[in-house]
Length: 118
Image 1: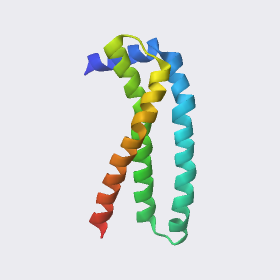
Image 2: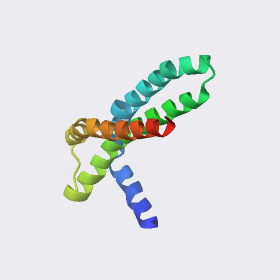
Image 3: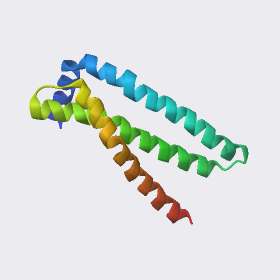
Image 4: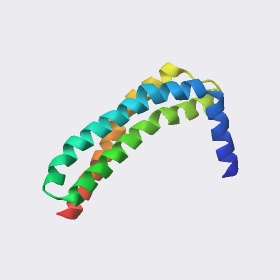
């Protein structure tokens, strides 16, 4: 476990500028969209004091954004492990390529959660 943490921190040190670029161009916009969306979706439920539904929607959107945010970091680690080089364009390409599938997986989990409450 300690070895994995050490390798991860070395990876971040080695590609620090790319990690910052990913943070600004991918993670920050996704988090901004998440914040705006959850505020507009949760507001009607808060008005009618339905805090359970607010929490459910916040959890679902948070997990969806987390799955999509992890994709560029996974691509960065995968490229470094396989090729010992990282191409920024491939990081963006992998994020776009797999983001929809991550969304679909989370949407399926959301449908299962709704079935439990019915």
